[in-house]
Length: 580
Image 1 (cartoon, rainbow, N blue to C red):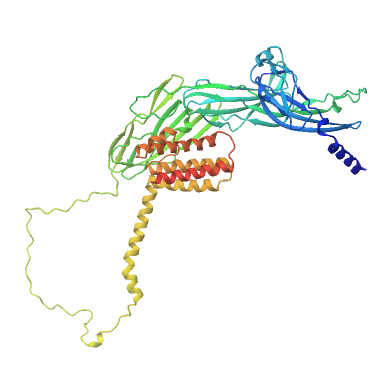
Image 2 (tube, one colour; image 1 turned 60 degrees about the horizontal axis):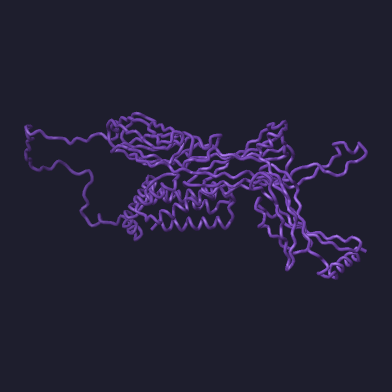
C-alpha cells in the first residue's frame, strides 16, 4: 500500500507540466522590533526551485545565509511546492530600518516581495524603558587610542535569563594585534531592570604592533534559545500546570558593535641606551647571591623585572660586566599572568659571573628604558651599583723561584780517586747463558703502542670540545633550536606546535648572532640581524615570519594542517637561509 502511494506521488511530480507553476515570493521575519546587537531571521518563501533573490538591495543589514529548505504538499490532488531561503539580518545601525522589496528572478520572470519595517532600539534606551530581553551581549575596550605596543583589554559578556544551548562564538580576527585570551572565563549573576541574569565574561589582551587606524569587528554569538511553546492551551486546568508545559528552542544570533581604534606611534626616543620595547609600568631590581668570592668562583646575578604591560616581550638587559669577568647567561624564568589589568608578573634574568682576578669590583648600574603610557614619557629603570670583593684562590699560590746570594761562598769540591768499595748485591753474568728472551713482543702490541698516543689525543680533544660546547652560548642556542624544531614536528596540538616553532626560530637567530635569549620583538630581531651584517631584506623577511608565528600563536583562531605545514616549511627555509 505504501509503495502505491509513493508511486502516485512520483507520477504527480513528473507529470505536472513545468509551466503549471507560477513564480511567487514572500518575505517573512521573526521579529519587527529588536535591541541593538540582536539579529533578525529572514525567510524568503518562493514557489520555484532555482529562483535567485537579489539581496544587494538590503543596505540597512548585514546578510548571512543560513541554508535552504524545501516542502511539497498534496491537498485535494493539488501539488504545492515551497522553497524556503533562510537568512540572518544583522542591523548596521539603530532606528527604523527597512528590508526593501527584494527582486526574485528565475529565467525571464521577476517577482518582488513586500518591504518589511524593523525597529532597532539602542541598548541604553531599552534599559531606560525597562526592556528585559532574554539574552543579550555587550563588549567594551579599555582604550580607543592606545600607544603602539600598549596592551588593550577587550571584554565580551553574555547575559542570559533563560537556558541556552549549542552556543557558538565567532570571534573577530583582531587584525593588527597580537591576541591572548584569558585562561579562565568569569561567571557570575547580576540583576538588571529587576530581572536576574547569568553573565559569562570572556577577556582578551590585545597588543597593537603597528600604528594607525585599526578596526575590531563585532563578536557574534549563535545559540539555541529556549522559548515557551505557543500551542493552544488546554481547557482542562490540570494540563495547564507548569509541570506539563512544553518549551522549544529557536536559533538566534547576537552581535556586539565594532570598535574603531587609533593606535598612536611612540614618540621619538633620543636616550643613550637602547629602548627595551616595553610599554607599561615596570620596576627593575638586581642583587648578587654573594658579596665576596674567590677567583674562579661563580656568582649569580639576579635581575627581577616586574610590572604591568607587555612584559612577555621583555628581553635580557645589557649587563656592563667589568673587565676580568666571564659572563654566562641562563634561560630567563617568568611568572606572568593575565588578570584584570592584563599582563602582569615578573621576569627573572640570571647570569653567572666568574671573576678571573682578585680585587674589589663595582658593577655599574644596570639600566633599561620603557615607555609609560600614563605619563606619556620614557622612563629609565635602574638597579643601582653592585659591589663584589674577590680574593685569590688558595689553589693558585705564588711560585717564587729560589735565588742564590752573590756574596755567599761557593762550595769547595775535592777530587777523589776511584776506589773499589765492594761487590754489587747481584753478581754480573759474564757467559752467554745470561742472554735469554724475556718474552715475545707481538705485532698487535706494537700497533697498540704506536697508536696509543693518537687515541689519547683524540679523547682529550673530544673532551675539550664537549666542555667548550657546554660553555659556548651559541652552541647552547643551536642545540635548543634543533630540539625545539624536532618537538614542533612531533607536536599534536596547536599550542605546543607554535610554542616550539617560535622557540626554534628565536634560538637559531640568537645562536647565529652569538647571543642568548628566549624572546624577541620584531624590531629587536631586525636590529640583531642587521648588526650581524645580514641584508636588510632578509631581516625584514625574518621579522615577517616571526609575526606570522606570533599571530597564529596568540590570535585564538584555529590552525589547520595546511597552515601548520606552511609555517613549518617557511621556518625551515628561513633557518637554512640564515645559516649562509
